[in-house]
Amino acid sequence: MASYVESVLAPGERVVHRAAISHWNYALSYLVGVVCLAIAATAFTSQSQGRVSFAAVAALVGLAIILVAAIRRATTELVLTDRRIIAKRGFIRRDTVEMNLGKVESLHVNQGLLGRLLNFGDVTVIGTGSSLEPLRGISRPIELRRKLGEIAAPRS
Image (cartoon, rainbow, N blue to C red; front, side, top):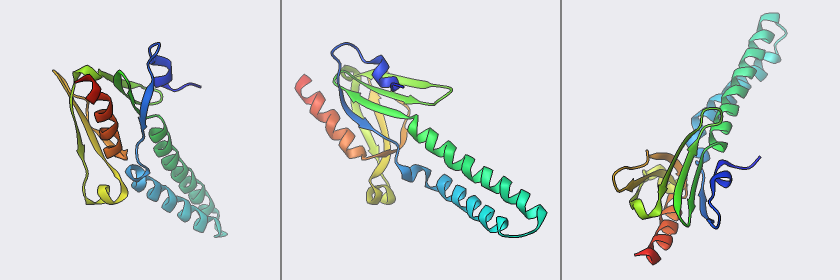
């Protein structure tokens, strides 16, 4: 199955950079899911009938939390092409935004201390007349800004 971006590229348009949501953005979901799985494992070792059904529910909840986080991460695309920026979120319900590079005024990167240490941050694309909604928890946001600068420089 081709990605959304691959299906909407114009003839001759090429992908310059692909950004991804950082795993750190979903760390709390992963942690809660693992805790549920640990509780389920502990309850399964018990011989009580009530605990086994509780363990099954806890295991399902833990797996669901981890799976939802992984799907949300995998179905979010942020791509910089030689002509535009394309952002797509969602699996069943799709939300897409595209902005021509000629309309981009600036790209803002917001990183806290933890984001600087773990190399993730929020990215906001500011354009003439509109802006993209901030993209939260992007891996390597400075690299995205650098690539945008490399593409935009020859156009000026």
